[in-house]
Image 1: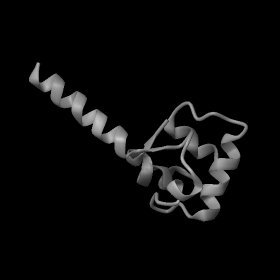
Image 2: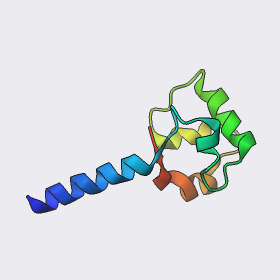
Image 3: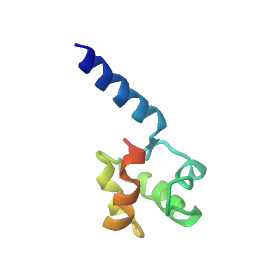
Image 4: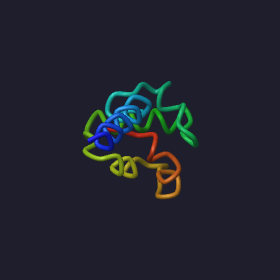
Length: 78
């Protein structure tokens, strides 16, 4: 039971620090490693027409490939 509580607390703490790619501002997105102003703007533009269902959907945005996604995936949420 203590282990389950620990895991729940850990997941909550991760989600509190993660950047929600469906709601984050350009400024918030720009704090991610390798994501500058231009790429952050592309993310915001992309999500106007598409909802991110899972964090890996971010790779649909031009300029975000597998390598860049791998570097930031632990810092993302939907």
